[in-house]
Length: 304
Image 1: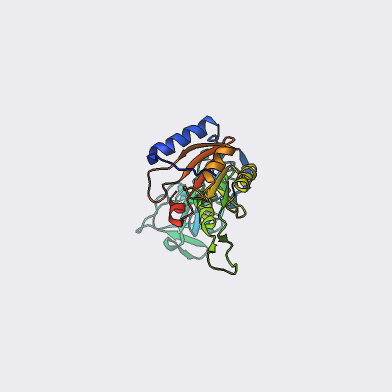
Image 2: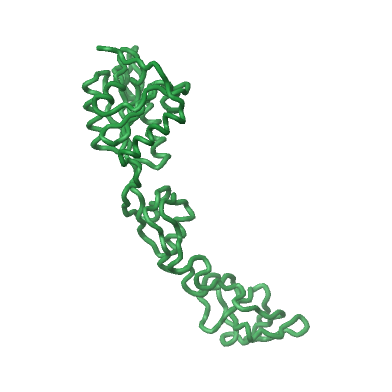
């Protein structure tokens, strides 16, 4: 079998630009459709549509302090030299932080600034309108935009959406990346090793990167160094995922079939990028989906 040897390499920026142009022409880079997930499970996902508040938060006037709800008009004139008395239950009502404001009351005097005796409270300073009160919509107003489309959801966003009345959220489907480990010499972790065996762990590292970047990693079975088996694996993986990553076989050794397997099932956009380590990387497309062939050397695999 004729050995594939790449004679030229492409500068990194040019290689990425060339690959992206190809993927755009294939329509691959359009946003993925949305799917519903529970808001508490949406961390790190990408919004598929704007999120608008259904409720105001708070949705009622509430106390921001422990103290006494009052009508601020009835506190006018209070001073240290001329304290004012307000009758408990009528002019002053005890209230805890977060409690709804009693109807008609519009300010809260903190408990530390009040003297209580004989059914009254005594205050030495007038209250201002809505003093120590969290008014309706202080945090979020109904119909207000909480999150824009194509926004990566953060922990604080989860809280804002729940406070705004959302239980479910429409997010982009995660890209599914199929990782194919290849090599006759590689074995699964935990195998009884013999000389020449190599424990396969690159796919776990690559899968972790995919997960970290917001995708869904699918690990394929180990494929031996066989051109036909690798081609079959690419086509099978193509049906499962949105992108295929082939680990090892990217160079020009006697058992390196990745470039030929991609070209015979699709198209090799380029083979060889001006980076080190990682020079033999392959960028390709199979039926409008990206296929990446990366070296088996762990550092090269991680970098590329």
